[in-house]
Image (cartoon, rainbow, N blue to C red; front, side):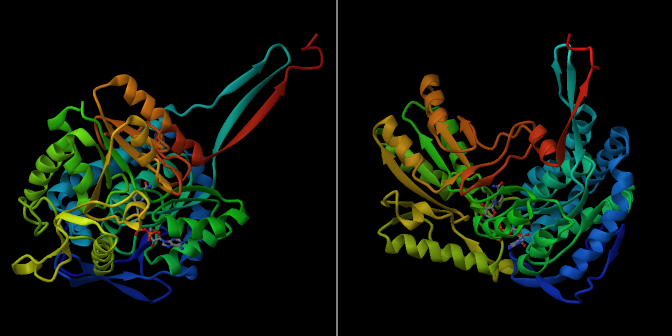
Length: 491
Ligand code: NAD
């Protein structure tokens, strides 16, 4: 699989790569150079209709294939993702601006492991039965929902796209999927992989386009029965407004403003190393990043010295260069937003301890969208900087003296996605884990991933859980069958 210099992306509908009926295209920009390098269809409701027709034709036979059949095809897709690691990683980096080493080491391997995991999951997925002593037996069928919509964001493009598509297909659904219009290239390459893997036509349809035109047409289509969405809280709210009155199944994985709580008794070196990652990996553009660092007062000065020394070493530069720890942020729009948030933090009285500026690398990246990793102190818990998601390389520092204070600060957010705790005191870790309002708690680690565990948030971070059996249950409808043993059975 080769990447030519200029990329014309096509929709994947009914097993074919085709032009959009809309005939409208968007520009695809490389954020590391600021250059346009391709065009993306901006599909509309006609394109969605076309995809739904293809999916309807495919559904009856796909939904009744054996688990072994689905296992083989999904596993084949996983193998082909691995075989095309370099091209896919290059696509991800060109679209997104993240370092190529990161795309190779994390994004693409995790995309293939999503397919591999759910390929095997369908071989083990079993239904429950409930016996009513001598009277009857209930068994619960878990049948595919039908045609489902999967919509994903730009920060971990193929990784999050496949995290939805793989369980939906494994459970026997036909899928209408839309990657972010900002990072469409790896999912276009996935279309080619699905054709090569022999996925029957119409089972997976990948449409390209923006939220208002393509995304909302998927959400509003009456024959799409479930929507699995990952993205901003703003778009999640719009989607719920359309989908809820239509009684669609909804899984919404939304924004985060995650606390990273550090107690004085932590394993220091491990904490500093991991906190650098949880603050700035992927330029801070991971919904799970710990953007509010909350530190016990007695270690605050020592923390600042060691943390800032680590931040200083994070080289910002060309994502194609292995030495770059930080690449570009995803777009000019996002660059402007993050720089605006840094300005706002200053106006709110925050002190920039390090960073705070745009970076202009020399050479081919001179016009790219790069921002220094930025650390801010001196802000209260309720200011905008500490309440609103920035989703960039920006963290704030706050201090606490008691466990109760730490908990109050951690929970001082409208979001509730993830939280990290650093302490060697096992009782305290468990106490805090019980009381923090978040869907995911990491103790003495960050972003450790076990695909079997429930993944998702509370409050404005969304509804529903992905991962493991939660995903398989979301993409199936439970139907209980109660069988009576006969008129004499209960005597
Ligand atoms: P976004 O909401 O702008 O877009 C996400 C996707 O939704 C894109 O494909 C977009 O085209 C589409 N979309 C936008 N508006 C839509 C609408 N009204 N109807 C249907 N589709 C619509 O988000 P983004 O900027 O791409 O991603 C960043 C956000 O995603 C951040 O808030 C981040 O926290 C969140 N995120 C959450 C998770 C999680 O698991 N909770 C993971 C990654 C990213």
